[in-house]
Image (cartoon, rainbow, N blue to C red; front, side):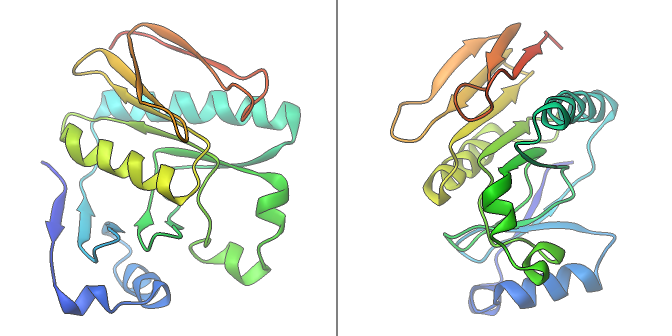
Length: 191
């Protein structure tokens, strides 16, 4: 099952971030995102292999973060209101602590109006590559500092950095958190 993209034209392009939040709360059994163009995207559940991969990457990121205390780690259930207008939910995300603490308590409770500093997107069997690549570019345009798109189908990982071309590496690979996540590394094995 692939993601379902609903183009509701003027209806959703007029939805505020608050209205999108209310729509999600009213339909909690449906995982949704919203593109900057106003398209509602219904996200399908992932299979076992993708679920294991997501859990492992979040676990490794969270262990590093607990040791450093440099930020906050988010699961794929968290939705971020991006500055470019989209409402997105990466598979794993990290926000630098001082940026997180700059948000009000109310902003932290709902969909935070902030772009993560770091994201991981894991291409599942149901994902098409091009929409994920567009999503990564949307993160970059919104202020992302480092992003990894892990693509088991093609045995590659794409590394996204501001103002640089996308770097593609073959799997297996060990990735560095660079200056964004100091001393963090993640070994990505073949699937």
